[in-house]
Image (tube, rainbow, N blue to C red; front, top):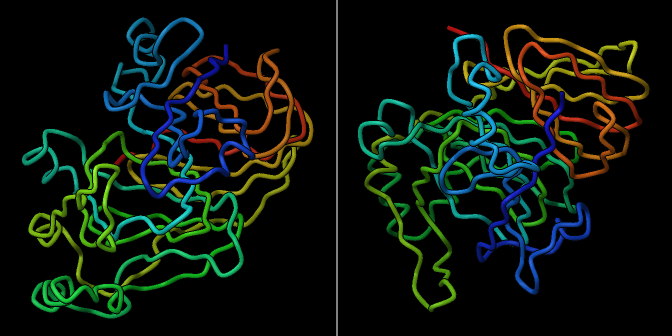
Length: 307
């Protein structure tokens, strides 16, 4: 049976109003930077009708996989009214040793982009630690970065160690490892609500950054016609697999090996009889058949490719 999930909202200083307009999120007079849709991370627990999502999984230990493993991903919407900081995330080994958390490989699906909007992803050319640190100290690190113009439907797999930033004008659905470890490199000298500069983590960032020129490893597929609509592989790695499903009819699938999550990017319908609209999110337990009907654009995530 599909489990409807409810988000946790974050009002970081770069957030905007688009998630209120697009998906009906309410945060009073505060902006919404992130809406954590599917999360068991203690920094933001998404909810079900009966409690937290983490509590649901504790009561259904084989809902994620047959071995009773932990839920591996965190899925959120991001509204960048202004640029996010230039940042990087560590891999599992470094994060677990230094931060007591998972590393963070992530996927960005562009939900909406203003004209001229884009992202920074990796370096435009090979560089090294010394040049990187010098550019950071000069406040010119953006000169080293690889800028990519984006449009709705674009997808990028951003592996741990890849320096990056979401630029103003983007709404993104992010699928990531269940982690909240971020090392800020450069933050445009912005100040928080108390007038303080936000902390940077340059030394740690330099420990984990891949200084090679950016190489796209997303490996998206072409759309494939299915009985229920059109499906496109967005990306897959050892942590998650993501598909775009343009639903026009009935999707019914049982996965005996893995959970699935469904994020409704556009449209409406029903999941196991539960009505949904744009912005809704669901968890589909492993081994249970779920029937989704309607006309909608869905992001479907499941377990990654085991190494």
